[in-house]
Image (tube, rainbow, N blue to C red):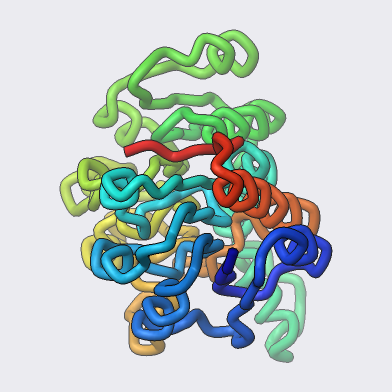
Length: 318
């Protein structure tokens, strides 16, 4: 059997795959081009891929031997799952393991944006710091503020746990009532309009789909407090980025902290890069040593089971 892995992973993970299949690993830091990915997948029985790799019907059409697509991520909007299922190709992802790590990053981003941590660090290095100033780099308090969580899934619930430790009042929107979050953290379910109107911080934890594309746009941003901050560690396209830039420029909202973008990497001419009231990170929500290693291990487990014709431990269905 043959396997193609689209990026270098920890050697102990690759060794597990090599033990059962001839394994080719893409050697570059940058992802394979669409053409290269189609070429490498054409003779593969298994594919271990990342969010940056588009697995569409055109690629699958030429991958006659493919049995399994294993993604090292929770999200899988880059994979045409229906096309895979129609061809009998198993699809797996890596849920659960990155929940707490991503919530850590989301809350750190909230804190950094509120307290101007990045601007303050740059100011300290710049040589401009000459004296203590009463109102220099002031920002809103986080403790006792209102946090609105849009999407109370696993990561949203862990975000609520962290907010509870800061004595924040927690509002949330979700398709169902989250009884544990209400009981343990005092969270209160509400509709989106009320959440936007009352929250000092709005944190997005929605999966990406056609129904959540541009879920937060100009209309929603206008409903937020002018002092509010928007935090997005979900998917970039959940927010209408053009509308967000306009809102940040106009002072419709006070600022934003973003780990994800509609186009990644963020183009060098993107207007977000010029705005002083936004904190920008390069999609590092799950970037801890332990979590990324465990994600790679789960992806390998899915891949190996798929190659053997066994049920995947973490399957994705259409």
